[in-house]
Amino acid sequence: MAGTDMRISVIGTGYLGAVHAACLADIGHDVLGVDVDAAKIEALAAGQAPFYEPGLSDVLSRAVGSGRLRLSIDPAQAAEFADVHFICVGTPQQPGSQAADLTYVHAAIDGLARHLRRPTLVVGKSTVPVGTAAALARRLAELAPAGEGVELAWNPEFLREGYAVADTLTPDRLVVGARSDAADEALREVYAPMLAAGVPYIRTDLATAELVKVAANAFLATKISFINAVADVCDAAGADVVRLAEAMGHDARIGRRFLGAGVGFGGGCLPKDIRAFLARARELGVADSLAFLAEVDTINTGRRRRVVELARELVGGSLHGRNVAVLGAAFKPDSDDVRDSPALAVAAAVQARGANVRVHDPAAIDNARAVFPELDYTTDVAKACERADVVLHLTEWREYRDLEPESLAKVVAHARIVDGRNVLSLERWEAANWTVAALGRGRRQG
Ligand code: UDX
Image (tube, rainbow, N blue to C red; front, side, top):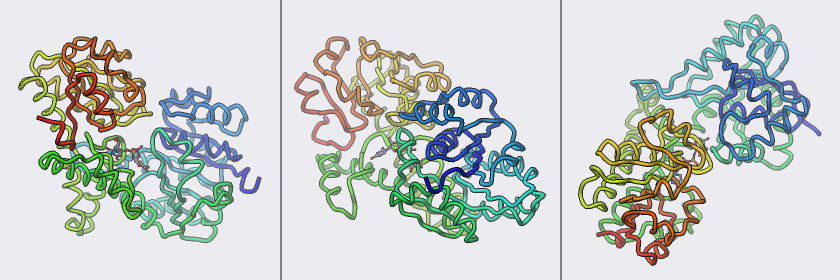
């Protein structure tokens, strides 16, 4: 197959890197995955995904089994082996600041650079503040024995958790910030099977490539907060935000996706990316232009308080001593990720108001327990709902949509539910004598 058989290293085998490395091996490249975490490397080398991601285990075991994906903790080995190096380490929010923490990116670049003795291409995939790539390019040239022979390109990643393998193998688009034609050509070769399948490829400068990623995530976050703001108006006016979103979504210029009103967005990307974008705009002297992103953030975190409020109203004014069942801990379905999870934040807030909280999630309980050990967890929905005064539906796992309200009514103390994701059939739950509250479906409340 054209475009296969390149020797590639992937530095950082967390969420992004593990998927990227396995998929590159799957399309025929020889890949070396490198991470500082020996336990992670060991798990991957045994073909095991270190986190929940549908389809990843298959691709990973195929890649490891074929010998096309190998793993190491030694960046010197990566430098020796590969001609193209992808930097896939995380850029979390800095503690006590809104900006991105680039510690891991700097460590990965520095760790690799000093071993680069021949002309090489280093490709950043991590989400970084605009301007980072240009600075890293200078640093590489300074530190690498091969000097100016080491080039840096930027190739942001748009994968969604839960669809990471499909998003990597059949992306909506490939964006490559490349200074030279040689870098551009090398990346076209890396992605040759995708290009042959017609995936759009957009070449830009480094700064544009960095910005495409954060701008895309900021747009998605804004779309969600927009519909959540409208949901409040729906509640005040007695309108239904779900029908409204459906009607708006038929306009091809708007589209229905990301108009899901509810408890709002969370996860390892959207919240920290809008904050880091705003922090960078401030440094660049254009904070006013992105001031609306602070409002997007405020609307989003306000959703969590709104759900707590609805729960309190449903149980008659005080959560103290009440039994509350929380359905969902992950920040979204098909993921075990609880970073900035709205569901878990609500569970903790309800408990802080004196409620007895029991949390159910099909995949995220171990991760949730690590963050909030004081909450009670179960993998049995009926057990979570036993004697509950109110049920909070906060992550829209498929199995919650398929719940039978009639059977669940038999185990709870009071048949009351808050649909924090607006995906349950209100007619069906109400027909089974549940009191249902939701965000933005005004006529259902009070
Ligand atoms: C996001 C981007 O979609 C992806 O392109 C980028 O690479 C990383 O960040 P991800 O964090 O996996 O991906 O989640 P996504 O599917 O975008 O959902 C983000 C959050 O928004 C979730 O908490 C989800 O529940 C919420 N959401 C999504 C809504 O509240 N309403 C919607 O209509 C859609």
